[in-house]
Length: 62
Image (tube, rainbow, N blue to C red):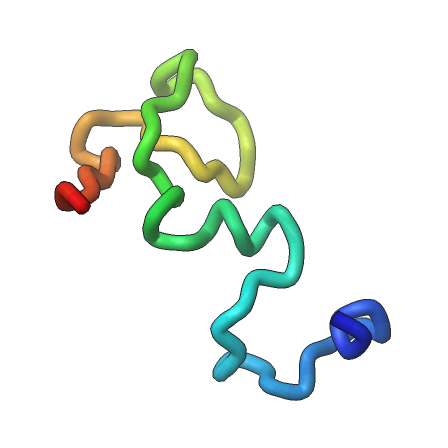
């Protein structure tokens, strides 16, 4: 955690850990696994929700 607070992780792209909420939402277990409440009305540049049925990622049963 100390490296992240300084502005970077020494592991770079090889790091397996999330460094904040933004990276947590990008994890395949969360990214676009829920529909956006207003469908296609989203104006965000980056959105973690599915806006159309073809964007929705269905996770395999665990």
